[in-house]
Image 1: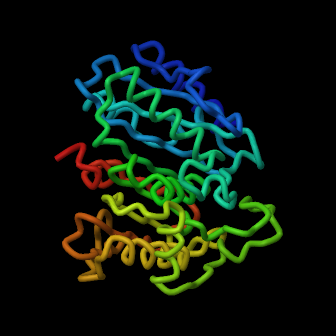
Image 2: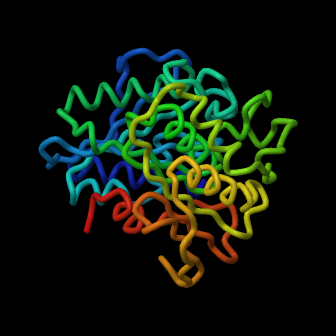
Image 3: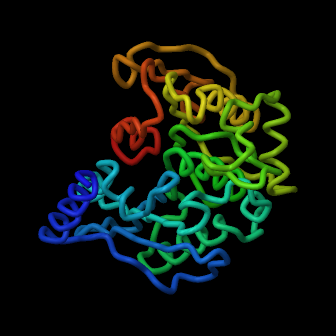
Length: 292
């Protein structure tokens, strides 16, 4: 109850001072009937960047709006935030669904792309500065979006998620689904993981999204091995290898894993961190290139 009260207070405070989270009803093709919420700051930038922020299982777009400090950074920097919300599958994203795992295949991914296109057209958004981030099921969906729609996203950041197509073939991807092999740390070679991404958009030879993967080493719901597997996947797709590790970045609990020169792929593992968002907004936005 306290969490809900704080969310309500945050929403009222935001409304009192200007811009607020708004629902968009008719945003285009929406095969799974997910919902769109958008936050447009009072002082939006010319050709604004867009961040898609994906909530965890059991959550909503409205809750995730208050789950990080991204709205305050949007106010300062003029970018737009899209908060998709799914009422399906215990409010979890369909990361196991072949439709979402196939470019232009539909599913939740297709509806999210419709939201992006609506926002780009309505607000003259910058098509070269579209990003995606999310936690837990939203982190899983972040990897799905980056894999299925590489031409749309410049970069992605997955928190406590799993590799693209890790749940492929499972009957569901919720904490209540009988098959938890993926979330418990399903292991494959970098080449096998990379093939999942490439097979989601056969024939695509363009630029791939830069990726940032963050996970807690004490996570027992989505095991930290899942982050290791996601890093293996994107290192193969992006053609970069682990070059060094830096302790204490972005805070004392975390160790940063740098691939290549760090511009394409980074990982962060938090000692003693469980299944929690652990979103350091400044690190996220610097990786995206939206703040200095």
